[in-house]
Image 1: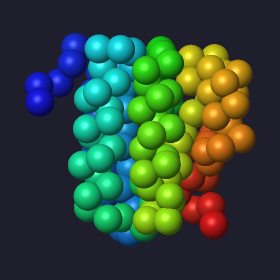
Image 2 (image 1 turned 30 degrees about the vertical axis):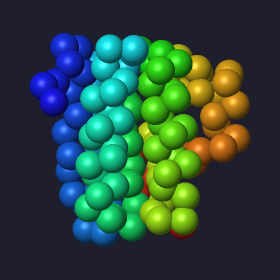
Image 3 (image 1 turned 90 degrees about the vertical axis):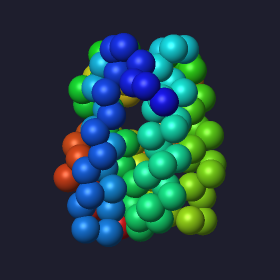
Image 4 (image 1 turned 180 degrees about the vertical axis):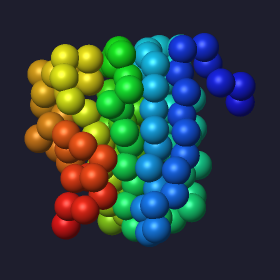
Length: 115
């Protein structure tokens, strides 16, 4: 699938973990690309999958729906973690209650090293 304009996802192995470095905007047009990237990373069966949203400028409800769906799919198979801070990513997730359901960390290092 060709990359949607405005979104890039870089896959980075970290030992038993995989980090997806996401940059740009996650909206109705780009959310499917994010979902496909997460699912492809899950197929590698890492112990931990970190979706780093620290370079994301905009997170729409379509993107949050993808993250929730992937989190549910990961349950029991791997640790699914999100890196998010600030008004563009953490705030919308906090307002919708996602922060109560999904492990969200302020930095990639914290997401990788948390138990």
